[in-house]
Image 1 (cartoon, each protein chain N blue to C red):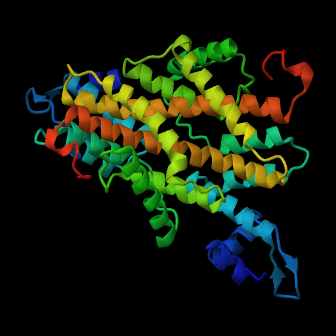
Image 2 (cartoon, rainbow over the protein chains, first blue to last red; image 1 turned 90 degrees about the horizontal axis):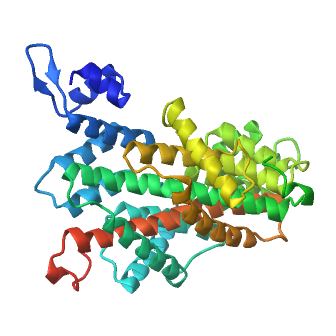
Length: 218
Length: 218
């Protein structure tokens, strides 16, 4: 298909597609004469991955490049590519001073040892967890490794199901896309539902006007 | 305490504190002469809430102002104040065209009706969920209201526990802070643990070097 059709099918404007081509995020199409190129389903899929990373993951172009490079680097195992993608989409704020972060990482190390997980020391998910622990600790809601253990074990059950659901008969780029979308959309879905449920429970608990409970939505 | 001690106790630089005072995010201290003012524990708590909203919630000053105003507005119920705070910290990207969003909202309405939740139509958590549904739908992973029901029921169990844990013997500003930190830190903690567990499971599944499984962390 031509670039105009690629734009139509993906909803990404032609100038944006040209920008991604220049930045190397999108591989060039098959040349058809001097000024035209032909694009295929791979381009549609790649554009979808790029838009997901930018719009939902909030990634900068440099981080998108890192993910795309990992997808295209066949010397990297699928596990390695997932790690690069995960790191790129994991928010970290570096909350706390050296002492606070060291305390948080001590809790995390103890937890990881306790449950026997293989998680890289430089994994950004450790930094994300450290941010949460610093925040809780500052609000006098500090969590120990023991406190986290039940949540961790529950997380592992879900993670096993998450990974089992990754199709194995698809291209590597699709598998990475699947993991990125599964993580971002899965978490957004679960978090949004929890917030909606919190709103409902908050209404019941902190504003219980008896007559309204059976009435329509406010 | 003086502004210098307030800065020391909270880690927020004096010029930043003065900026918050000018913007009305922080109430003025008790005047002690022409150029000095006295600050108390309320200021420490308020600064903590502001920093959490900015650093972890990623909020702009205008959104922080909305939350702070809701905390201070005694005509608003606690449930109402929670709603303002929740809306401010809820990410929404407005993914999808009109048709895609209408389809997502139809699924959400059906779900909310089915589980009998009271969730405002304008609640930002609905928009957050719509983003996730649009994303999944674009990746051929569309979810129906029936698909969501089990996740929603699980979310409700957690939400009930979340709300039951909100202390009722504290100031309203502390209750709002508690909900904000509980939501942000609680989700970050759960999401980070799930990502760490996914990394572990991904290693087992997609890069199983038998000798390494019992060895130390890589």
